[in-house]
Image 1: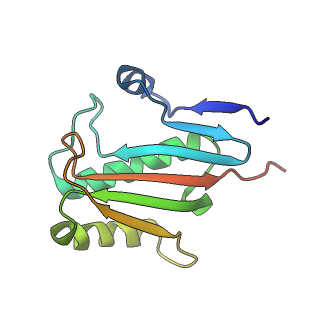
Image 2 (image 1 turned 45 degrees about the vertical axis):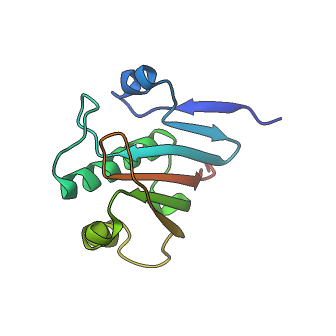
Image 3 (image 1 turned 135 degrees about the vertical axis):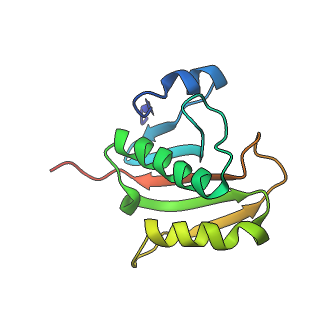
Length: 132
């Protein structure tokens, strides 16, 4: 049976402890990353939507990095949006910066009514690269 290992980005352990979940779980060669949001250092939402999405990606990258992964290791992406129609252009522009060329990750976007004060959240599954 594969052992699971908790992965946390530096400097954010207290935030995850306070809310009772892990940033990510490593199981075999897969990394399951909890939903990442555009939170300020104190855990509160960034009020500017564009910056909130950018911070969500920064938090995602920090969690991936803690497991030795990058955005190129993603195998599944799900994003959650409180107002997809109004937010689509902003999210798409940031997504294109994060993934400027093929191959692009598969992606499912879901409209939701509540994200605990946030307007965007992204969760992923990544394959952890083999160490040479």
